[in-house]
Length: 259
Ligand code: G3P
Ligand code: MG
Image (tube, rainbow, N blue to C red; front, side):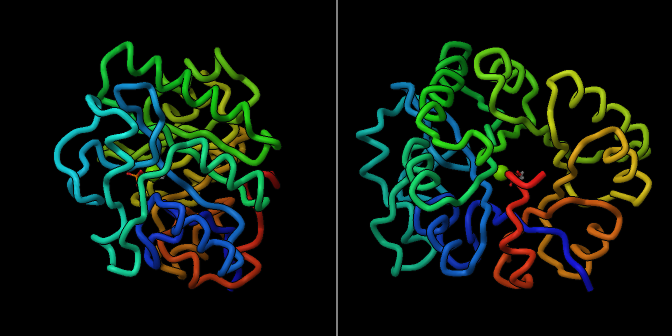
């Protein structure tokens, strides 16, 4: 069986707490070249690495974070919920991830969450991303994705050099109708890739996206047979919680910089 290349979802999230430096560094231990992570913004404009728009599930904090300063965020434990081994793991700032990419040669898919912050903070989110990515030594080592086309459009206007990908989740509408719409939206933001959720995807759907010139990276695929099927249909990579299960060749393929 041959597999598409893999991107570790929220880092090596089945082995370490998601979206922490520990989960990202673990990629090195397993020879995984690429990881995905999520970012949002807080009151002082800091860009933080977190999936949910509340602190409860992945930290010892409670509630939302749009009213917090980075000094408050740094007090939170983001690892103990996963295992006491990771007690004291912190919510990272985006700039720490950029420094990790620079120092290790890892590459990453930065997902901008469809932030529920107000207008000014959403602008601060894009400003913060642009300021942090300016420290990146190799702009090709990052692919910026989002479900939020307004945020991607804003990033394109501010920093067109960072390649973009559009995230989509299939609905119950006929898949080819959805794919036509995805291609339109991805063309509008001049994305290089489309990131669809795996369910409902067909060979015809993947062909249509690749023939339109887009790389197709599918999430969140933890089943190896399904991954192989998607790869045989033309998917470039899968975003997975279980990168460690894939053969070494799929783990080290660098799907973000090797397009
Ligand atoms: O970027 C792929 C995937 O992470 C999108 O969904 O909710 O896991 O961020 P979510
Ligand atoms: Mg994500």
